[in-house]
Length: 95
Image 1 (tube, rainbow, N blue to C red):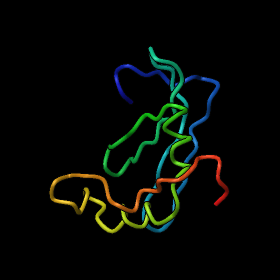
Image 2: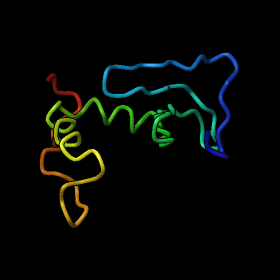
Image 3: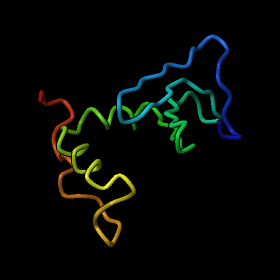
């Protein structure tokens, strides 16, 4: 867990796994408010996402995630830029 976060005793850790990986998800309180923490025990990597960042995930289609999974160690773009597959659509649009 990161130094600036503390898991709430009332919030259970949710573990989700398949044949490829396992992740743990829980809510943490930071000095900037509540965040969703996604932690990968096998690598020790984690990310804290604010509500707006979580909402932004819903704006994407599965093409973005397929692109990210094609190069799980990092972006395929040598310049480190974002892939063109990121959805640039109206967040209110169905899809």
